[in-house]
Image (tube, rainbow, N blue to C red; front, top):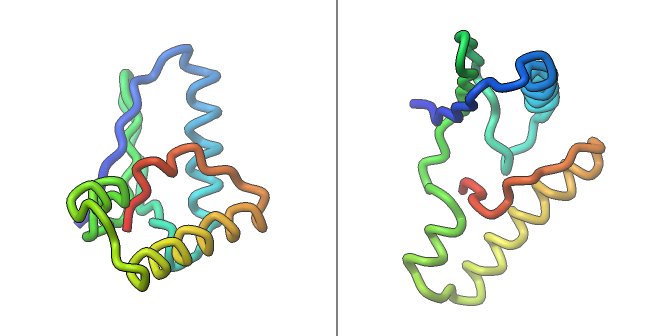
Length: 103
């Protein structure tokens, strides 16, 4: 099972460079708290990125659904989040999509 992220292609050359950069960066990352990219597909109008499926859904939805977390659960999720972000910083990569973080 995979998750798919689809981009519309606009200003094709610049966008293709950015998409290729994201694919290259994602392929270089190997961390248990960061989803891996599995494949990419390009058409004339769109680029699809296929990621491993995070069965827990998004962190935002998880917190929203549970309304509050017990200390131990919150501590564990925060530790995983910080571990992933720390790894990205160590690799000199930035994550702009932490709001929907997959768990």
